[in-house]
Length: 133
Picture 1 (cartoon, rainbow, N blue to C red):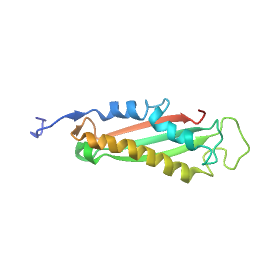
Picture 2 (picture 1 turned 90 degrees about the vertical axis):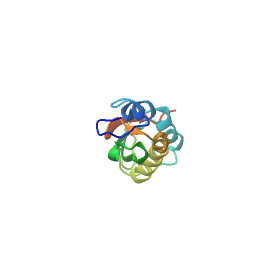
Picture 3 (picture 1 turned 60 degrees about the vertical axis):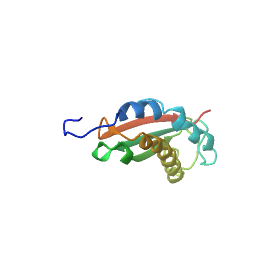
Picture 4 (picture 1 turned 30 degrees about the vertical axis):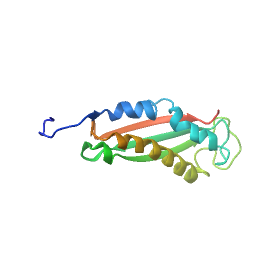
């Protein structure tokens, strides 16, 4: 039982899940998060040595894991300084955000499937994916 008197099947540590599945806050993104972007970088028109910063804000209404939502913000940087349209976050941003959001949604769907009660109501993670394979 929890303090409110509700029976809890199991508790899910959403912070640990985010670190393992998305990456540790302030560090590199996980393979599961970054690999789809790496595989599609050329199609997005991004330089091979670009870095993509992804911020994921997870909210868990009523701490019900089956209701978790994710907000995704994405920016990219060209450390090589290539002469391309929008060398920092501009031209392909809408497609990049859509792709990153889809990838995050796929990962979050697995979290929803765990069910149970979340250990926290919100988790924010900021990671970087290098597009170099």
